[in-house]
Structures are given as structure tokens and as C-alpha cells.
Length: 295
Image (cartoon, rainbow, N blue to C red; front, side, top):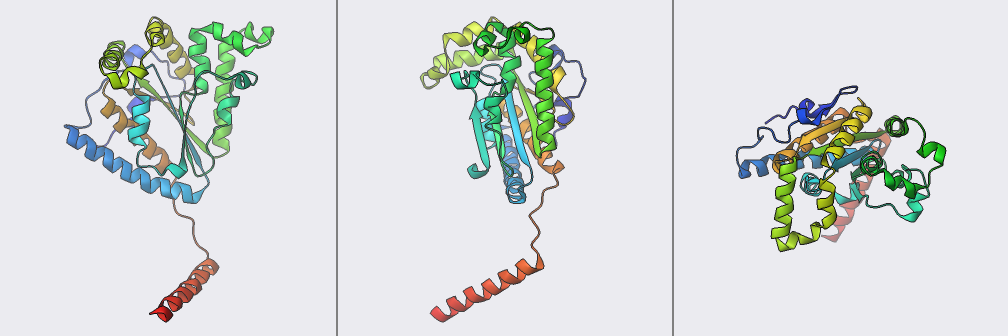
């Protein structure tokens, strides 16, 4: 089934009210079997595209995943990207910044982890935390020891959005495609998943009191996401709001978005020159002669 991904893309300049964006939509699969078959088709196609992407060695692809806790980021990355060659893919999860990272600008630690040409970089959380959790908990800015005229200056958050947009524009100009996913889960579904983590011993490690404490700031986070999506979804680096209450459906939508990004690059294997082809034929003849002499 063809998925119209434009329904989930935030257009540049679009006002965002997340209450208008569904956390669940009609399924793109009719059964678990069909889901697995469809995801398998996506994986096979992604493998083909990645092989050309790696061989061409001209673009890099940055995939950013942001979400509230238990929205399914880890599972989406695991299942959607499971068909990708690990040699051409790099995954980074950004937790609480280290002392060294706090001594640099807020984009520094993620800049150091950008994908090389021919590779896919995946950020499980990213520099967007600096306009999300830092906005909900502005006391965290104290750890960054910013000059007072900056920390207390006018339009602080707008300037951060501008820095991010300029940074992503720079990446595009240098061959890195940027695709951003916000996995949009409902508060009720998050609560159900938290209960699952408590009731299943093998998932207990995923749960902490801090997760519950953050739920108290749900509305603040939604407002922070709305502001962020409005300010930083650009034609060259769009945000996609993925309905995440159904994990399987979310994975299919994400897969389609990634494949469309590959299609836009018009990938192909590097052309071999006539001289190189002649060299290969000579090598072929030498190898065949070696094998024939050993028979």
C-alpha cells in the first residue's frame, strides 16, 4: 500500500497545534503477517538504495528522531533500519551532556557525530533537546555557563531556532540530507507503555521515577514541540509528525519517508571508464588463466 507521506510533513511556515495531529491513523496493514511482509519489502528496497548510496559516496543522510519517552524511537530505529549494512550506518544516542560538551556551543557534540559521505547517521535525540527539554527546564541552561547577556537576552529561543536552521542549511549545501521525525504518542498510550515496563521484569530497566516526573510537564513539552516544529521545519530539512500510538504503522510510515529521500537523490552506481573496464578484462583473463593452469 502506497503511503502519502505529505500528510505527516510539517510544511515550512505552517502553524502547528499538536491537538490537530493524530497519534493514531488507519492502519496501512491488515494483519501482523501483512505488516511483516510490507516491512520486509521496505527493508529490501532500502538495502538496494543504501548500496548505491554507499558506492556513489556523494551524499550523506542524517535521520533525527525526537519524541516523548516510550514513543517507540528505539524500536523504530531497530526495525526500520535492520536491513541496512552496519558499515554504512552510525547510530548515536545523546544523553546528559558531559563537562567537555558543556564547555562548547550547544551544536558541538552532535556536529562531531555527523555522518560521512556515503553513510547514514541516526540521532536518537539530538541538538533539538536544547530547544525542548532545556526550554521546559530552563534551569539546565545554568550548566552551560552562557554569558549573561546571551542567557538573559531578548528572543533567546528564537535565536536558537535560527542557529539550528542555519546549521541544517549548511549541511544541505554540503551534501547532507536531513530528515526529522517526531514520534507523536498520546499521553494515555504513554501511560499504558509505562505500565507494561513495570509489569514485565525484562523491561523494568527502562523505567525510572524521572519518567513519571516528566509526565507532569506534558503540556509544556507539547508547546515546546509546537514552537520547535513551526520554527525549524524547512523545505530542505522537514519535520514529519508520525502517529506513534501504533508502533507498526509508525515504522511503515518512517520507512516510506526514508525511501522517498533516497529516490530524490537519483542514486546510481558510479560509471566505470573505458580504461578501467579494459583493465578489469585483462585482470579477468589473468585470473581465468591461473584457474585453467591449476586444473
